[in-house]
Image 1: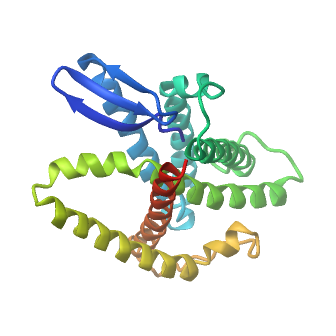
Image 2: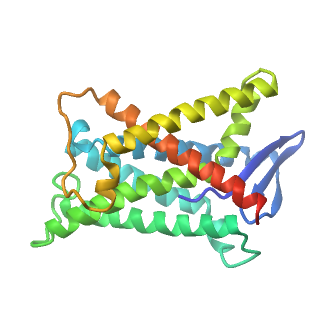
Length: 251
């Protein structure tokens, strides 16, 4: 996942977009639909990512279709942000940009690994593709890529969370001081519960293949499972956000 911009600041006759490389460009009003499209794709990818995690609870067929959807969105996302890729080897590499590039590369690898291993394991969407003797290896790769991808994408979102906070800030009409405290309290509560959910759901064990099969409680309502994973995502968004702030200040 590549978020090409860090800040989108509305102006009277256009938009100012600050790129992750530090470069600032002027965007004309007619570019606004493209910005909205990028944001919509990012939101859809985030939602799809969350619904991929409880694959046994949503059903294997639904899991495969959601996985195919997120891969197509991933391709579209990179097409829309192709300028970021074209400028990858240009400009100054700050600590923030180095981390961002490493995360993007790791997410790309995890996404390709998830898709290829998913195709090899497919029982519905790609059922016609069958290669004997690769199921165990494909299952391990799929688990590694899925759980590492979830954490890496959350960290990547966190690096650019200031953009979403600024958009949210304009929608909430409260004194600046109160909004800051509300945001920090919410972030703290979500991150704290995210730590609990990370341990409770044994995510670390799946990331390092200490367990080769994911445990699901089929009597548990899907909403409880989703809330736990939203909290874990919130935890790593917070980590990415504050890490990004630190790197920008100490570049």
